[in-house]
Amino acid sequence: MYSSENIEKFKSLLASSDRAVFFGGAGVSTESGIPDFRSQDGLYKQKYKYPPETILSHTFFVEHTAEFYEFYREKMLCLDAQPNAAHRKLAQWEKEGKLSAVITQNIDGLHQKAGSRNVLELHGSVWRNFCLQCGSPYPVRDIQNSVGVPHCRCGGIIKPDVVLYEEPLDDIVLNRSVEEIRKADLLIIGGTSLNVYPAAGLIDFFNGNNIVVINRGTPAKNMSGVLFIDGKIGEVLSLL
Ligand code: NAD
Image (tube, rainbow, N blue to C red; front, top):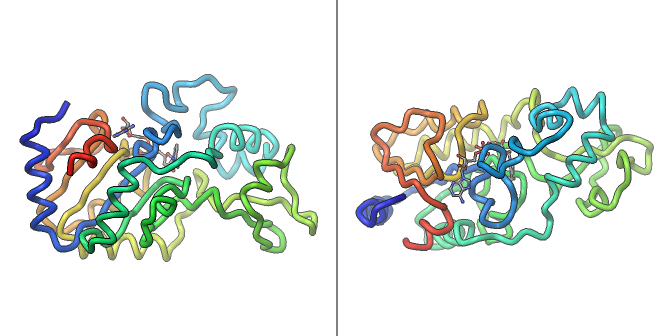
């Protein structure tokens, strides 16, 4: 639980910041009804034939494409989910000129749905899909409505523009994220276990003095010297 004193500290850090950056993960979207990986009711705690990390890997996509899509359509496509209070507050801060970027590990597009514009999607987005052979784009509804492996008109396999385990991050997105974090004077981290690399390593590029972490439970990295608020991010950001 968090104290009102910590909320007040957060408010004053935000008030004295000229350039805040938000870095987040799957926990930002749980209040929109999208399960994360590592919470009590997250995908890691559910029973599948393979662990989600295996299913969402490049090798699995190549070798068991139909099984990949079975899991992906059922668990990763939450197309009707709506932004929650956390997404909306971050979009508001950007409009007010307080927040320069949202850097997210999420692939659900909810920050954009809430109105955020400078969103750096480290792991891509379910909303973009391309043929691996000819590069033709496909709307996500085609993937959702497909049966088995979705194919392009040219016969190629369609792949979501999502970074699977074993795949590299997009250089441009990575460099822009590093740049935003380097220039920030306040880093707000939320809804992430900080277990997934290289994404989690990006926060080490922060040069400023003030870091606020809003998370249910302690993330995997050393949190000494940061303002840690143990709570639901939508709830916490609504108080600001
Ligand atoms: P994670 O599941 O490893 O960690 C989520 C963290 O958020 C946990 O520490 C959990 O306790 C916390 N949390 C859950 N609900 C919260 C809430 N309402 N408020 C505050 N904290 C909350 O997720 P991760 O660190 O993002 O890393 C795993 C990978 O999950 C990422 O690569 C991401 O691509 C992928 N993923 C994305 C989505 C999505 O797009 N919504 C969903 C599932 C997984």
